[in-house]
Length: 271
Image (cartoon, rainbow, N blue to C red):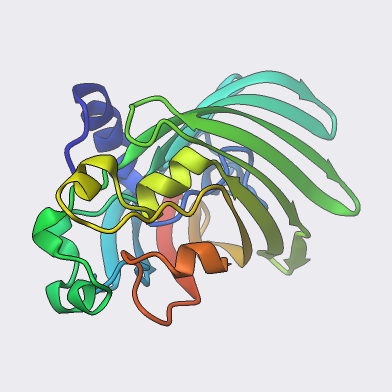
């Protein structure tokens, strides 16, 4: 990837939780580690594991430090953060900034796998990571939590946007908090074309024209937070994203790939 100077600086800060899939910038379904540990700051270590959609790319395994902060007005949660614009009982409205870690270097594609899809790897461009600026609204009550977020690329990578809605139902088992969730995201035409299609400069070199256009991506997942030993907490997430046909059919996507499975595990301590 070749991010801009701005995105390099902010993504370096964001890589404290460089999970392959972006978590919502609103309060997590299970509450953040800092909230669970009764402290504004939480520090720790974790690892993210994700299958890759891209042809020939290996499974992504990323160890990283965990950094989170929960203040009255501002918050930071690994690869996303923001400011509270409105905070009322059962409702929040946040301005958000989050890293989009969907980029891939051209050399990380499998040459043979791309060739089987009719693409010459040498003719491709990198797909860059990005930073998204957005608004997120959250409602919480006895029936669970509902989050709606709209965010757009501000680094000029895709120049696209994503809009999503997520429902979660947190459950308490002793000290352990578990929250199964279901969500759906709308990827704009520019966003989907950049990460799943072929670019104009690639087509000018002879790569076949493929532009999937806007797409809807459903996702299911479960979050878990288990406090222990005072201010410590074990944090985990497992999720699955189902790719629609127009994204699966991309020549950049691994053949017969139906979706993406991701997992995250970490341990942190509140301060």
